[in-house]
Length: 290
Image (cartoon, rainbow, N blue to C red; front, top):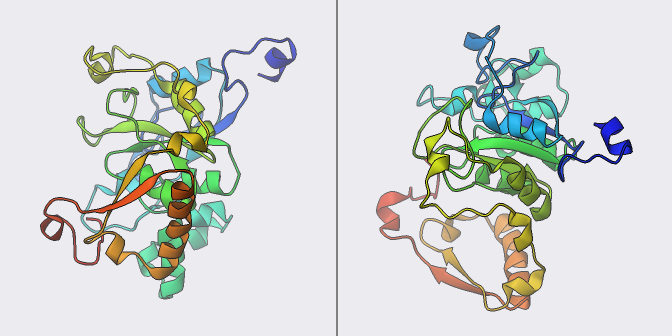
C-alpha cells in the first residue's frame, strides 16, 4: 500500500487506512480465524473473504486483525456475559492488555460491582473490541454487525460514531448470520466523516446477498456528499422519548446529553419531548434492554 501511494496510485479514499473487523461475522481468508468468539470454530478455514472484507481490500484498506466480541453475538443462551468470549476474554480487558489468564473470566464472575460495571459499559453488546479500539485511538476505522443495537449501542457507550445501515445496503455474504431480516454490516469511526467514508467503502451490490439487489431500495453511492456543518441543524427537529427512556437516564448521563441538546438548539434545532407507542407495555420499567 505504501509503495502504491508513493507511486501516486490511490485505489480509493481509504487507501492504506488500518481497520479491524468483527471476529464473529466477517470471514477473512488468511491466517486469522473466524470463530464467532467461540472455541468451537478454532482451526476452521473459510473459503474466501466476506464480501465486505473483499471490498475493503480492493479499496486498499489494511485489515489489521479481528476484534473480540460476545461469543456467538450473545445469542447462544438466555444467560451470557456481554462482550465476553472464551477465545478472547473480556473486550475491555483485551484493550487494556490484561493477560489472557486473568481476562478469561466472565464479567458476571467479578465480585466487585464497580469492576463488573466497567466491563459491561465498555464492551456492551456483541461488537466488543472494535468500538473500544476506536475510542482508544488504536484504529481510525472498524467494522461490526448489528441485529439489534450491536453497532449503535457500543458506539454510544464509547463516545464514537457507529452507523447501522439499512438492511441490504451492505452485503452479509461471508458473515455468520443471526437474522436475514435484521443483520447488517456497518462502520465505527471517531468522527461522523470517518464513519461515512467507511460506509462508502463497503456499499456494493452482491449477487450472493439478494437483499443488496432490491431495485426498490434507494441507494446513494457517495454518502460523504451529505457531510455538512452545524448549519444543517437549522430547523431540524429531534424527538426525545420520555417514558421508560429519558426518565430512566442517570443524572450524570443526563448532564452530558443536555450539553448536546443545547448545542443542537444553539444551531437552530429543536428537541421535542415525545413517547414511543405503548411504552409501558414494550419497555421495562427501568428502561433496560431485553
